[in-house]
Figure 1: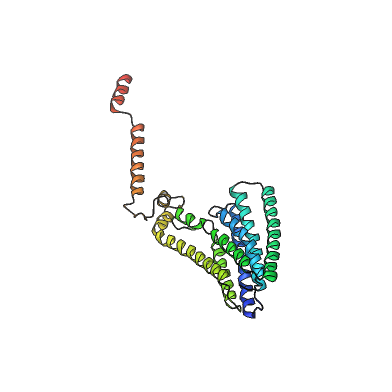
Figure 2: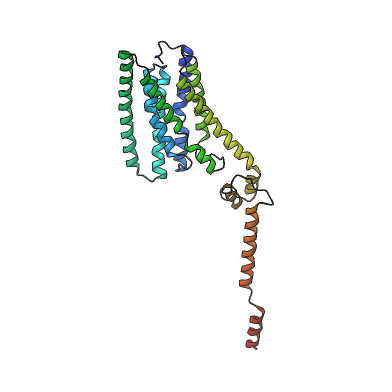
Length: 293
């Protein structure tokens, strides 16, 4: 696809809104991880792949002469994804802050140099030889890297039976709006870019699917969470809640839950054993009485 020759005002406005969203989308996630001192539920591979996608993403946007906000977008996205990845190393992998800073700084410098080189090569190939396939190839690499970052998400949802843990919902909402407005920005340009249009559309669909997945989890566990709340525990601490999370894909019934029956039988057996242990046999009582006499 040939670079854009002029950018309509509507494309700039929509692109600016999308860029603002994608620039700040990860800030709630960074803040949540910092407050909780944990990155549980945030796949490190997702953040690393997203950060890596910023290099070809930015090179493609610049070489195609997209509107300025869309060109800035990959740079901010790459930076904040790298910060999130650094948090995963610090909180989950227990790296030292110094090592995390040095590694992330080195990656940023490498990304900046590589992106500048790619932009120069792509522009030269198009200007001197009128070659468009190198630009398309770089865009495809960005597409694959960004979408690949979502691959760990289904496994996290399956592991937790559809529940979204660790990922901030404000981040997901802002991310969705960023993808939507960026898609609209491309649609209002003089020529629509199908590669990045598909990319933004897929991002919006994936983010929406995560909202739907968690909503279904909330609906399925509504009675279970109520029982847990009545007992003064949350679903992650209550035995029945823990059992449900670890037991396939069927929501247990209130009275006939196999785990509840097992727990009740275990408690009954334990109480019976304690009673036997604390109560001496009758013949021992008789012997003790005889010896006393």
